[in-house]
Length: 333
Image (tube, rainbow, N blue to C red; front, top):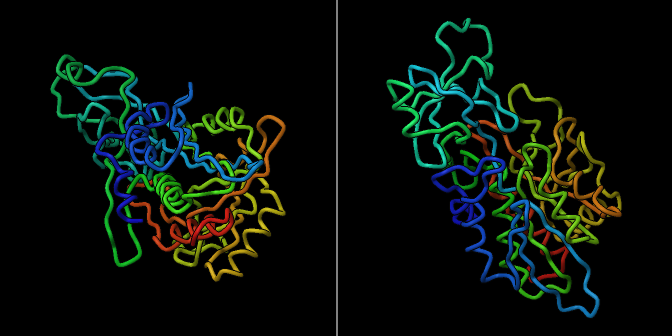
């Protein structure tokens, strides 16, 4: 899992709407594992592994490959860049960190010097400094509409836990790749979907789900935990197993599917937890409501410090998401 995850962290960002870098890497990994690999008009990567059953179900497994970031909307006379957020940005977490552009240009995101000490940084009070001394110099390196994100990194803290970014949701992408490696001869048609623009409204998954018309869908994304300092009460902890989503703010998952997954986890002694998230949402909601509707659920990876530069996961939780999927879809364990 750690090797697959590292492949998902390229040097340049794949901000929502600009996922080409991540898509190219993932497509290269998936081509030997699937019968068809294509990108749709939205930019979703759709990889099909055909099933062996006489009348196979259409099963959609989805993880988003976009990440939160920033887009340049103004260049000042002194060369500083004003940037607008793409996705849910915590400027408190992002302040005083290094950013990298799609072009490879690097800079630092900092708040204005006169910001009161007790005031949390906001978008309009932060800027990116790329070391330019004038607008003309900055414009030779960056233009309006260029996107950047916090520098990607991955640090192994111990045998099982890693921290870095963007684990949201490259860990979900890594899970899909591991599942594809394990499900070499599925009975069902498995559509591995690496979606775009999840961070700005679950846009890509909706169009992919409409095109596929899946009978069943599982989404792989991060979820919050109740063991983070100051967190809201929540029955999910790092390292306690894959989190089977029951609901979040945007979706109530298929009840029968939730029960099937939890029963299977218990029967196979796969560590699993029940997830009820009182905030946020994932591609699950978009897929569930597309077309005539779809039985949809989600297997979440417990994560601390989401949308920061030090997102933290326990690799065993991701591995158990893979194990449970493979057991559920009938592949070799």
